[in-house]
Length: 280
Image (tube, rainbow, N blue to C red; front, side):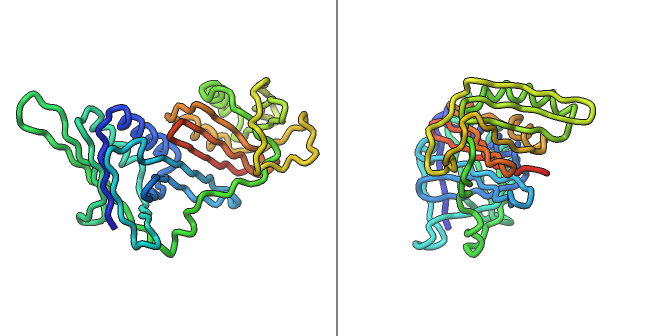
């Protein structure tokens, strides 16, 4: 197995760092999956058992000036590594002003993703900073768990209001309850609400718009005004909103009634999917 990449463009480096930092806010560990065309950050949480799931997909050509990899074998031309994204984020943050950054898979005392950067200097002597981020190589027999999550047949799909607005609402609501209900319909309406023995609070959003229906919809004869709802752990939703640094051009929410909420952030060269299960 071999992997090495080089980032020269500062904007690409900053963007890649923001993506990794976002991932680090969502999970302590995840899988970095590499193939010749793309990089994936995967958290294959068992949503059915109450865990969150995540799938982040990046096109390598939009970030790396050079990119070479060889997988385990020709049939499985991929590399799967378990990584602590916080460690990778920290390494990248220290090299933001570098002339160039190289990222490669190395074997030190253990397998590592090594980040090395040539930093600008006033003298003719070059300064190179190197960070070794320990990783675990995932054997091919476990790769079947790392596939893109299948999108369940949703009842409602809706564009989200500005994420900062949602975050401000959720920040206030979390002080009143541990659980929050997200409900929406196919007429562009969405509500965030909490209900306890002492208080009931609802924030209404309208005219959000709904994405065109694709293959993943279970609309049938559903009334466009009919609300689909999911009750979620407010901390899991807040964690998603707090860590978001992707600055999406488009953000959407799919709801499977009383089952799961599927959040999608899209930005030219990055897509991030996040699954939060319903709680009873």
